[in-house]
Image (cartoon, rainbow, N blue to C red; front, top):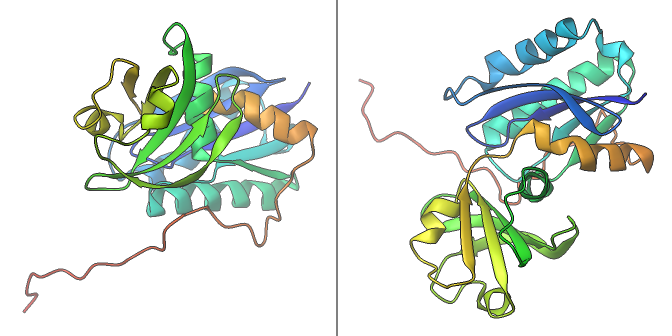
Length: 230
């Protein structure tokens, strides 16, 4: 039996799960804001305790690597690295877009006759990180920033039904109006990582624990408060 710890912290939702042979057997989540750093390790510990396991009883740790929240991604990757360093098990990573695509598939969110899945992570204002997948979970367009307009994804929509899924789907629905456009506003979940994580493990696509970094897509930009402190 192959057991993999799953960690997803790329958006406002913080979640962890345990998969056995590609099937999620335990899952915990919280949408409480700015709690990723304090909850992620606790959730993993609870899942392992509930299943009578220790980290070294698992075969790998898989983390959602982005794009997404800078802070959330740092928390998830740092936690995953710590577990791997301490137990000697390998590190796996899958893109946040893959998580959302498999969430659409695994939770039966696809409209009948759907041709494409467009995962989208909020990048503020009218921009999102997007990609395009077919309905079998294969990525067919690279992950990139996208500024919404009425003509966005016109080529896909003219070919058939498209599911837009992610925490930017809600604001996208206010811009794109097309009979073939369907929207699911949600955050990626660790429970949706089971299938792609198992595939990565079988293909031995392990990451270098020392040097692996999240996929930010954009450089992190710090802002300076305009409030006077003195």
